[in-house]
Image (cartoon, rainbow, N blue to C red; front, side, top):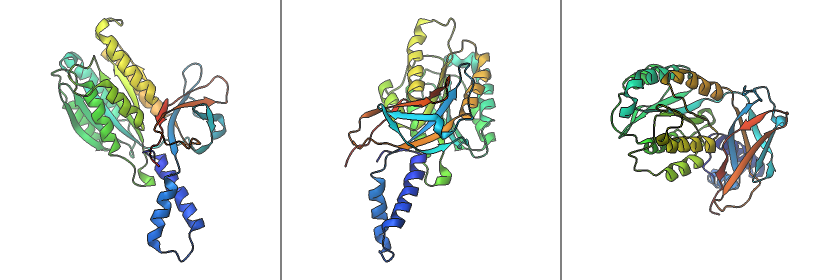
Amino acid sequence: MIARLGFAFLFAAAIATALGAQQQPPQQPPQQQPQQQQRFRAGVELVSLNVTVTDGTGKYVTDLGQDDFEVYEDGARQNLTFFSRTQTPISLALLLDTSASMEERMPIAQEAAIGFARQLHKDDQAAIIDFDSQVRILAPFTGDGAALEKAIRATTANGSTSLYNAIYISLKELRKTRATSASDIRRQAVVLLSDGDDTSSLIEFDEVLDLAKRSETTIYAIGLRQGEIGRREFKEAEFVLRQLSQETGGRAYFPTDARELPKIYQAIWDELSSQYSIAYSSTNPKRDGAWRRILVRIARPGLTARTKQGYYGPTGS
């Protein structure tokens, strides 16, 4: 079964419980019930999506209904099994580049990140991860705003840039927040700030991209350029950050001045606060592990939907 976080857990459990109630004889021994439910869940493939909808001016549109959404998987129309405009709590990894090149801009970057963390709601949680030559989890996932702020203020600039290692570790940490009950269901996001190419990671970019595409995580990337916009040494970092954000349904920003950071963090928060949560049960019965392309269209004219570009199908029998 697809390792789907969040809505997949809720739907599969709910449907399996309902089916079990209909098919099991009243006197059936209790020890047989988990086996029957497990067999059912293995045949249900649910795909959850966080969808951002904008109009022609880039303004978020938040008043749509379920009938306004059309979801296609490899060109085949899918029927939605869940739709919500209510903001689901979020687990968010906040990544900060603390390499030596960030030294002069650290105070501004810290204040911008603190302002972002202060907007988290009471049911949200975040982790603070910084990276230079090494990757450090300064604060594990928590809703304690004071602990998050303390961790951000503790960052100092030094060393090289292990960007890929940091993203890989953050995605692994987010997997640990997997829901164990309906009340634990959360959206997942990574918000990262970096000012240049990776120079010291042991992990290759292809490994990071593959893990991101297999996750339920949306990546928002801020590439803080040094100097002129077209500077050659930033081209690789720009490609990396754009691809990670596009594949996962997020966005990439490329400011040239650290003073733009508060505005960008606010834009990311505004988007996270404006998303729809939807899910569908895939009509594709194959279990070949192949990549499945997702497209979301909006019936209302002039609107554009953005979400992750696809997912890997299930494997096994």
